[in-house]
Image: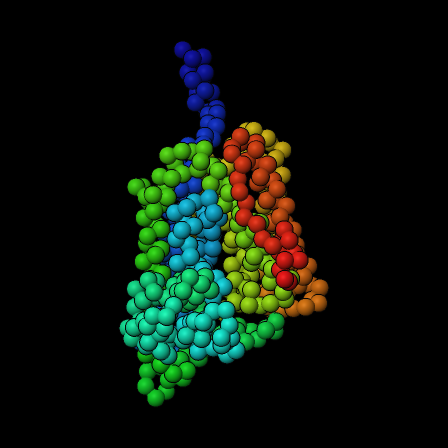
Amino acid sequence: MKRLTAALLITTLMPLPLLAATPEGVVANYANIAEAKFQDSLTTAQALKVAVDALVANPSDETLQAARTAWLAARVPYQQTEAYRFGNAAVDDWEGKVNAWPLDEGLIDYVEGAEVGGENPLATANVIANPKLTIAGAEVDASAITPELLGGTLQEADGIESNVATGYHAIEFLLWGQDLNGTGPGAGARPASDFVQGDACTGGNCDRRVAYLVAATDLLITDLEEMVAAWGADGVARAAVTTDPKAGLTAMLTGMGSLSYGELAGERIKLGLMLNDPEEEHDCFSDNTHNSHYYDGVGIQGVYLGSYTRIDGSVVSGESLAELVAAKDAALDTQLKAELDASVAALGAIKTAAEEGFAYDQMLATGDAKGEALIMGAVDALVTQTKSIERAVVALELDAIAVEGSDSLDNPNAVFQ
């Protein structure tokens, strides 16, 4: 009897074998993480709304800075959602409402150096100054600046993608104004008096500028609520990846590969370096591009590892792509993990340099060897990991993915034509 008891005790103390990850478990975890990321994005947008309301109620340097700080905080979880683009139609079809870029800011407010009579006739429309607009030959009543006007009429008006009237970057422009420093240090410097009512108003039309800021912030919250619901228990985005787990795995790797390669390495990073143009920065008004790029990289890595650290410090994790790949090709899994570490480190080096005073604007300057080395270090790391992401598709016996490209990577001469 004693021997039997000892045997039972030994059996009880022995660790249970780990269950192998399954496609079903991996895509379920992927959906759970998406819901958490978009919920955090919504929570931080709601905090931004509180700060904006305080700015509107009492415009001052302090309340303007608090609103800017809230905007910066809101970018951290949102950028980590971008690896959910490209492979997920529900996200891709929606994303332009909240993160479209670059934008012709002269559509929204006063600017210096706007191109009059250029390719975009609305590049100097300045809806804040003009209660009546002409779009595609038709007169538009813009006397009331509402979420409906911004999202339903002005966003991509006349079919031009740079007519961005909504989302993070429209709000960013309103909070910071233009960055007129070129490749020198410094962000936009809009004064708090641009939001003051009455004779102390600078920039003109402060009542309409306030209305625009409030409407854009309210619309951002509404749009994020939509995406939180899409990844909820009965949401269309969750259903799309969990109903067919194989298609869900393809979506995961497509998002990782396309963000790594064409979007981040190409359009957001290398293109700006090739043109030495700070207007190609992703968060160009606030000089937050170093953080924007970094959290994109963290988001890509998180999709592979099946883990996300929430804004409250808690972690959402579960079965991962890494486990599935390791079961098929352990060496490839080890390599891809190392490459993801390397890309996050390279993006982190840009982030650290910017935080220590070497602004991303300055890194883009013609002939700046240090800046070019930092930027190309990130580009090269992202391109390298994309090749392994494509190998993972083969290892998992999935259909080939279509990775987004960029002329800056695939046909550099075309950039200057």
